[in-house]
Image (cartoon, rainbow, N blue to C red; front, side, top):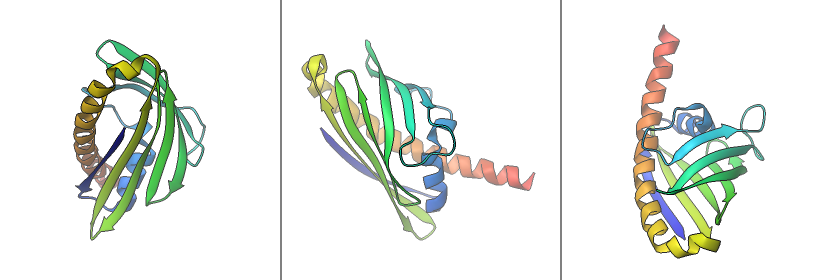
Length: 155
């Protein structure tokens, strides 16, 4: 399954990249399918950094997923590979400066196998809807986060 989408974030490219790089430090939205996200590699995120997450795949199926950063090119590209029960894939963000804004292009490739193959059509539809909602959440969270950082600097 291939998914791609883009959104414009009203923040500079360095701010957007920093937020994505440190996504494990930000609170998860209440409706997020990611129930838990933890960086397992010490120090700042970099090529090879590993994460562990718990994701609600279906209403009745929660999976533990292992992720690793496979592309790290600040502030333009951040990508990772992931695997878990019944699935594996890649996720990537490509960022482009458009004046003071950032165009965020997201792509994801997922392969389902085993029992999840039976739910593939439903999973594909649900994942596409989640992606659009997730990009809108990223936009909102990055814009809110930078305002918070500015308020801390002036305090």
